[in-house]
Image 1 (cartoon, rainbow, N blue to C red):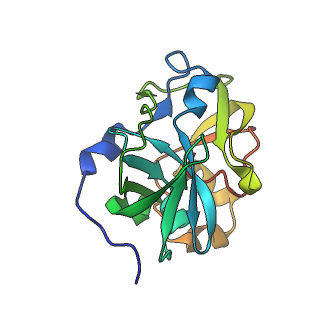
Image 2: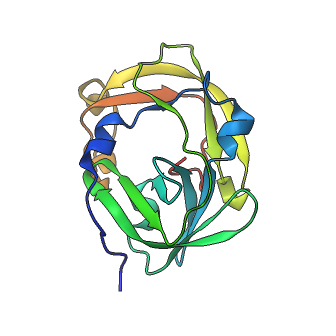
Image 3: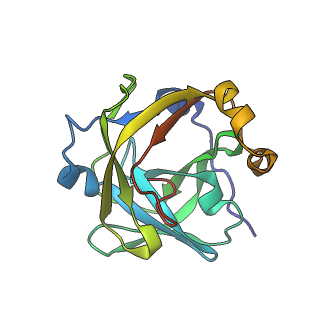
Amino acid sequence: RHMQSTGLAPAFFATLALLNLAAAPIDDAMRSVVQVETNGGLGTGFVVGTGDTIATNFHVVENAKEVSCVLPNGARVAVAGFLYAEPKFDLVLLRTTKSTDLKPLPLSSAPREVGAEVFALGSPQGLQGSASKGIISANRRWSDLKPLLSDGLTAFGYAMDGQWIQTDAAINSGNSGG
């Protein structure tokens, strides 16, 4: 049996944006980042809203029969289901079975300028608590990218329209969702 939706929270996705690093230095931000483990692999998530709500990428949990989150202190918390899933945008909110007691990350809707410092936080290759640093190389619209990319990239089934942020920060397998 696959994970089931437990409710809706569409307004959250309208406000999901970039981590506000001025409000959350990297050490503090890492305390809100979790490793998302499934029967088919792993990814990264972060606490939003209350301590029992984790945001991650939909593809991390898409076909999972079991999902759990490993907290920064190594404790494991089971996931009860999806609070909200938007496969078209590769986003999902997970509801854990109990509060993680972790603080949510402060998010910002302010656009970031080209050259701004960015960080990829997560569990690349299962190495929990990793951070890589880069810059925003460009802000692009899908319509600008489409002629440059192979048709294979549209096969994921995700909405390719909208704003894309290009970065040189190292993002590896297991960083998805962070």
